[in-house]
Amino acid sequence: MRTTSTSRAAVMALILVLLATVLPAPAVAQSGTTPGAGPGTIAIGLRGAPTEPRNDPRAQRYIVDHLRAGATTTRRLEVSNNTDSPQRIEVYPGPAALQDGSFLPAAPGHSSALTRWIRVDRPVLYLQPGASAEVVATISVPAEAPDAEQYAVIWASHTSAAPGGSATGSGTGSVGSAGSVGSAAGSLGSVGSSGGGSGSHEAGLDRISRVGVRVYLSTGAGDDPGSGFEIVDLRPVWTALGVAAFLATVSNTGRRAVDVAGTLDLTGGPGGLATPPIAAEPVTIAPGESAEVRFPLSADLPVPAGEWNATVALASGAEKQTRAQDLTLPSPDDSSPDDGPTPDEWTGATSATVRPLGAGVALVSLLAVLLVWLLVHRRRESGGS
Image 1 (cartoon, rainbow, N blue to C red):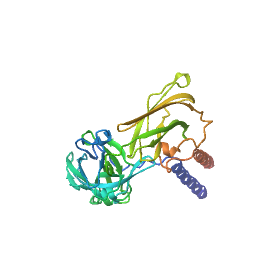
Image 2 (image 1 turned 90 degrees about the horizontal axis):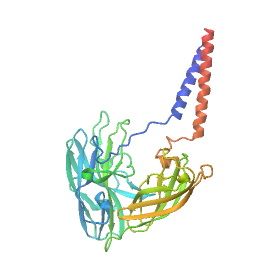
Image 3 (image 1 turned 90 degrees about the vertical axis):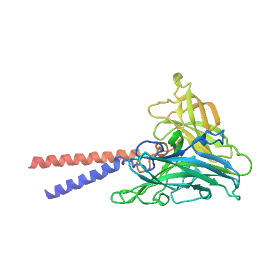
Image 4 (image 1 turned 120 degrees about the vertical axis):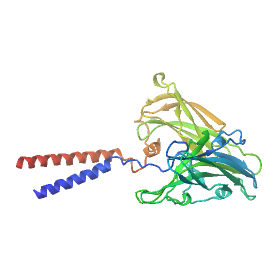
């Protein structure tokens, strides 16, 4: 009887392990907060609209400027404490880069030529709950500055103490790397950018949360070199998740980075079907580079295979482009598995949370066999007692 009980306990332990493998892991909350997101956050945004550049609406949200060597400019920022406790907030510049259509901030503690040109008049703020303060950022371009465009983020950072710890760490030396910077509503109606780097509460480390405003600075002689982009092509695909999607290849034809977003309209489909405007996933493209703008369709918006009339309308600041063409969406059976991005790319999930379907089915089948084994042995034991 002891051997049977031991075997049953071992099987139960194996079932628990398999369940942990099959069931998706809980999502880990990101430490980066969103400007203007409400209670529990800090926020940073531009204060007051600059007069230049007049033709780029992004300058209302980000610091977008062109300066000659030796020139200086300033921007006023507002930092707010929307948490329910006093906060020590550090304000500092950090470098960023453009890669594969994304605006990527560097991990805390790094610097660049551009960040060394940026100074803030109040690098440390002590704000009560609900309070805000103005910070002036000055960008001084040295006389030997190259003709180029550089990128940075002006961060507002605060530290939350781990249980039993203290929140005295520096935002510029925190553990972890910053996430991709995306747009979010900032204070005073402006739009800032959010990202985060953190330690782990479970590991007994303080957690750093930070929000920031992007900086796009072009330097060189003459006027702003200007920006532009072109929609090179548009193609339909079936993703590995079995959902239709459309990809537009966009090339940056100017000398400034472009933040491209817009919509796709599908009309004249099978049976005269049409779709509501499908929003693009915004991308940021460096000068001279190309990126794919994705128009993902949800499972709630079925788009059958067949002929469609597609119209793409994209914009970056004042620059606008459209492209209209007839497309044929192939049936899922006729499409190649290489036609579209992987499930990870389309859902944002990590490889730890996306598991192959075949492996999941095999594990579930094994669980079923083990459960049947347990039931049979319990009945035998009951019958024998």
